[in-house]
Image 1 (tube, rainbow, N blue to C red):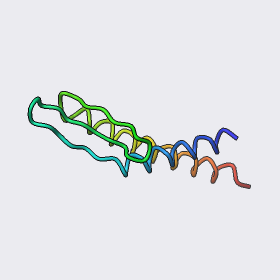
Image 2: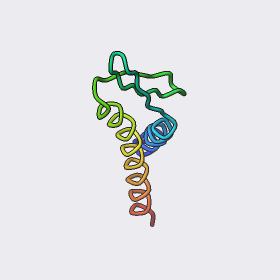
Image 3: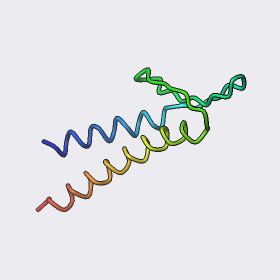
Length: 77
């Protein structure tokens, strides 16, 4: 059951990471990210923060999907 929950979480993170967007404001300097499908957004003082959130969600989701795939291949008889 845990593998299915992890796979679902991985798909959720991967999809929302791929469909998120980053943008910036110039006065004051703010760098924002937004995940439209779950209506989650925030702003940072540097562009690194917004990119880490977007890429972190995408890569963590991909790692969970690949991990579940490899676990399923290993357990198959």
